[in-house]
Length: 104
Image 1 (cartoon, rainbow, N blue to C red):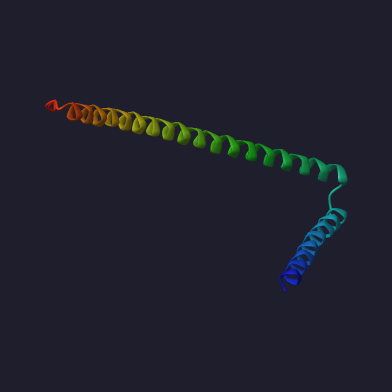
Image 2: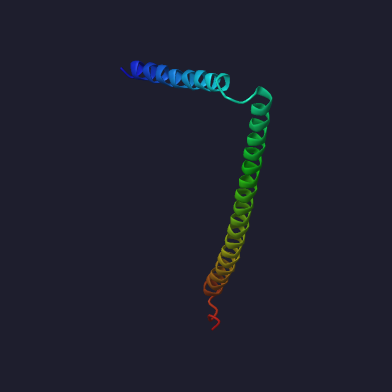
């Protein structure tokens, strides 16, 4: 049963992709612009998309880097506080085991 659904989904996806490719090819064939002008405009569009993608990547990378640095600082502070508290508890336990008076 699932196999049929999977095969049907693949067929529909293949139909959509092939239809899009055929449509794009026909649009290029029937475009009112010359091939040289069309290629130039496509190249400019691709450059714009490439630049936009690069800018977005840099923005996301810098945000992620800042978040990672902040998280590292927070974890480091928490680890130091936990370590100090653990030492204090261990020291108190040692004093109690020896029968010494707790330090106020």
